[in-house]
Amino acid sequence: MTIDVWMQHPTRRFLADDMLASLRRWTGDEIPDAEIPLEATIASMDAGNVGFGLLSAWWGPQGELVSNDEVAGWVARYPGRFAGIAGVDLDRPMAAVRELRRRVRDDGFVGLRVVPWLWNAPPTDRRYYPLFAECVELGVPFCTQVGHTGPLRPSETGRPIPYVDQVALDFPELVIVCGHVGYPWTEEMIAVARKHPNVYIDTSAYTTRRLPEELIRFMKTGTGRRKVLFGTNYPMISHQRALAGLDELGLTADTRVDYLRGNAARVFGL
Image 1 (tube, rainbow, N blue to C red):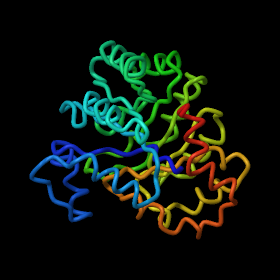
Image 2: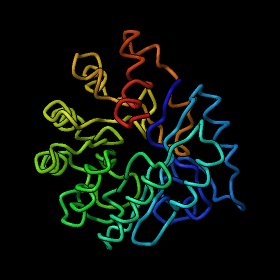
Image 3: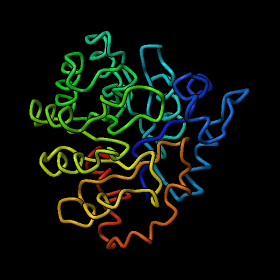
Image 4: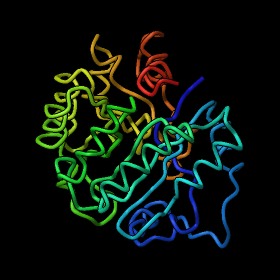
């Protein structure tokens, strides 16, 4: 069973937000007139033979684009297909800690995601640190984005070095899952993942055929085979499109299993 560690079921307000205007230009997609049924997301998963997905809430300074309540409701409808990743209001650190705690304990969420460019704040910003401590106490990963931004926002917050590296030094027990492979700083991202036992990379926002060569080489090493997780960033990339060309990577059978599900199951306790 393939596991997608970064996906969204898109609400209309998520798709209509100005931050996605540049992505809409790339994809040619239009803002839907009505809410998209959850079954459309499941159909995409089925078309790519993806059995389970981690549905992410999205919370930025403009408010909830995909709310924790919505994610909890979707997970409750299809508990065999989804688990939740919480979003929080970074500007209210203690309320954010309480929200994260409630979602993990009451709703079974399996991680926290904060997208740094949404807040124009790298992970070393002091507002994150109470959340890092709570993630450690709850035993759930902190998920974030590394690399440049597709939306027209500054990319600096996505540098693996110094930001992810410093957080991993400050919180060695914190499990950190870094999405979007870190391009154009993929070598930096690999170095940080190799250096820190609890730092991982997910391939969301990249189709198999667009994965950087240096990341593919890393996946074939003894360390790298346990460090890279499959993700799509659906709906930006469909599951079938994301996985096309997988056989061309030349992964061993064991490495392929680790990449598609084993690493995700271990890291997120699924």
